[in-house]
Image 1 (cartoon, helix red, strand yellow):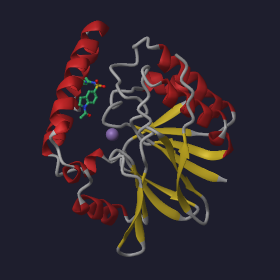
Image 2 (cartoon, helix red, strand yellow):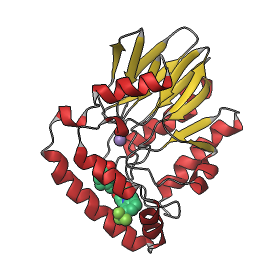
Image 3 (cartoon, protein in one colour):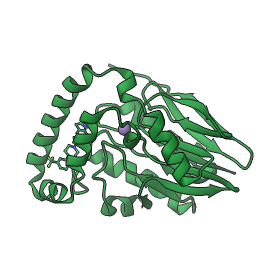
Length: 243
Ligand code: OKV
Ligand code: MN
């Protein structure tokens, strides 16, 4: 039996190939798991649980199957779907977790998080994060009519595209000191996160390691933890486009 970790699926109506491969993953591979942990950015955008987007419904129905098979599913917010709330989580049968979360897997201590908080060199992003994580700002945003929220979100995304185009990769990667500090504070042997879209297994001093999930763009990415190993797997996302 294995525990699965995924992140950065970035589901959106425009990318039906990714949606199809995620649904395939849920209906097949996930059913053999002991538990599924979604480490953020399941969705590309999230402007409130009251958004009637049919994709949200499709995904919640698929996630419910895990609950029916007694496979627990946990969710940690990403930088894109940070507004995903209890109401939607309940419809999916997911348990919302705060981050970082330290867990014991067959005696192995593992710390899990989305990973954006480790990117401390990107001060512009950290400022943005502080802003949109303010409770009053989130409440105000969620109180706005849906069409207005949609317009605001579209504007913020358009602006972010310009901002990120001029950032270098090492600014957007995790800060080594932030990683080591979190490892030291939690005492974990293994860190699992996503966000950077740089899948890898990094060995760290003291027989520790940091395992990074990839995004589900051209491939799917999953981390499988068993009693004896931590495996980072990439699998192909097969697509047929008809036009
Ligand atoms: C998610 C990111 C857009 C990065 C807005 C308060 C405020 C929430 C929001 C609006 C945007 C999420 C919810 C989105 C992530 C972007 C652009 C950059 C770097 C407010 C609370 F400020 F307007 F009051 N938002 N959306 N970005 O479109 O999903 O992560 S989003
Ligand atoms: Mn992210």
